[in-house]
Length: 287
Picture 1: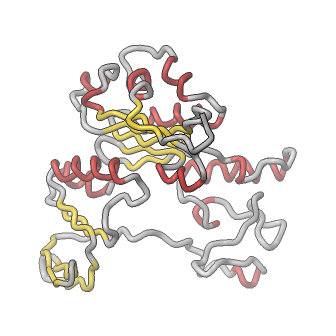
Picture 2: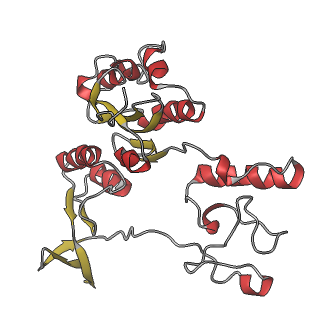
């Protein structure tokens, strides 16, 4: 989605083939729908539920053949970007000879201290099967350093409320869990607003981009923030404040009532967290 956004803004005509029923399937449907509407409004053609069956190279381009709803279609393209995920590049490292175990997809197996099956060997970053983010690799180095010259107490379990950003325009940043929190036993309340309706977000108006939405999933009983999705200007920065609040138990009301400098995007918390869209009904016997 990032490259689709980039190349569309460069002026290319872009078509995205998504095998799943929708793009950004890890998000709640309402947030994913806003993101898709923004991309579509910019001219990106998104074909969800498409199964690409063939790519035919030509003299000046290529033809993508795909199936959707039981019918076969084709699209002509000048260039094709395959974005179907990554696998750890461990095939030629001779790990078997070193006695280092790997998983079926080639990832090096590690414990919570990032030790491999050979306790004096550690595996950091994309190679160990964890989240493939630069900042996760950085934290991996802290865990190993703590093992080598520290107290040896740091583990991957220490990583709580790690944010993630999809760098489309505007950025889409998330942290924590979605409305699926109910499946984990939470009674939730949802706070959120379209960016265009957030009065206390002057930054969006200053840069003339009021597209997007902010959404918070909050534990209705404890007021703890369980997750957030922020699709807006500065989302990649704002999400770090939310993640920090989640890691340190800062309640939604505290984030709502804090004083933020002006004009910024974090001011939006004053409005968004005061806008409760809906709250789950308490179970029988509760207040």
